[in-house]
Amino acid sequence: MEQQVQAEVPFSKIGGLKNEITQLRFMVELPFKFSEVKSQKVGLLLYGQPGCGKTLIAKELSKALGGCFFKVIQGPELMSKYVGESEELLRLAFQECIEESVSRNLPSILFIDEADAVLSKRSTSDTKYEIRFVDQFLTLMDGFYDRGNLIVIGATNRPEVIDPAAKRTGRFDKEVEIKPPNVQERVEIFNIFLQQYSAFVKISEGFNQEFIHSCCEEIEQYNGSDLSGLFKEAYEICKRRSFIINKLGQFEKVSEMVLQTDDLLISVKNYVPFYKRI
Image (cartoon, rainbow, N blue to C red):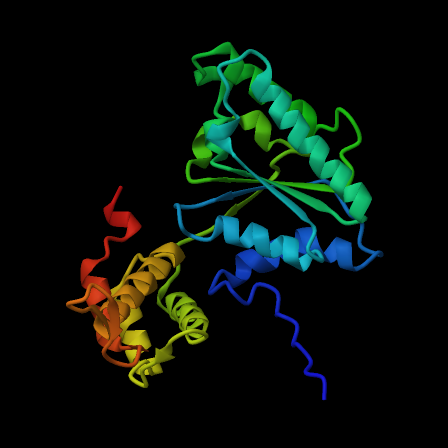
């Protein structure tokens, strides 16, 4: 009998952020799925501390749209010392997304990470090329040519420095704050990582919900990226316990690989979360 693969539930890889994700889905996904809902220009600015899930949310939106074309550009990478090159790179990024949208008959998402690096207030810019770049972005967002079915999403941890003109209607007119997870949301994220790691390593029975909740209460202010770092460190501890380098200089397995609760607790002691690094 042929085994059927169960479709992945949209946004199932994201713990918490239910209200934020619902808001975004109504703005972006609903008009695409139901023709009676009028589709409008979509410009989103996601803001929040690094590691809180802005990029992950944008990628999951692209999956919810049928796996549409998703292009990521890093703000600092766009800045060039040559006159006009930065503006041309931005124009080409818009053009590529529009062409892909037309060829696939799907929306395209242009994701601008670290948007504050290239779209800061023109009144505080030191150089003319920074001002020209913002001007070019505003022109493209206003539809200097047919934008096609293009969704532009910016991400920043400093929304206050974004040029106000970039936040006007038809541009980044929707701002969504991606907040650090609370205890229950950290529990959700923890369980997601636990499920992912169970695909390639045995998980100790000690990882019950009581332990998970207690652990998530202890790691206050940790975001999703921090939890990812915790699990990576715990997995490294698990590997070092299960393998040694013998006298011949070769790896030798000395015990079954089982991710233990102690591995995670040691990881908590050693890991430095983002909020302590700023």
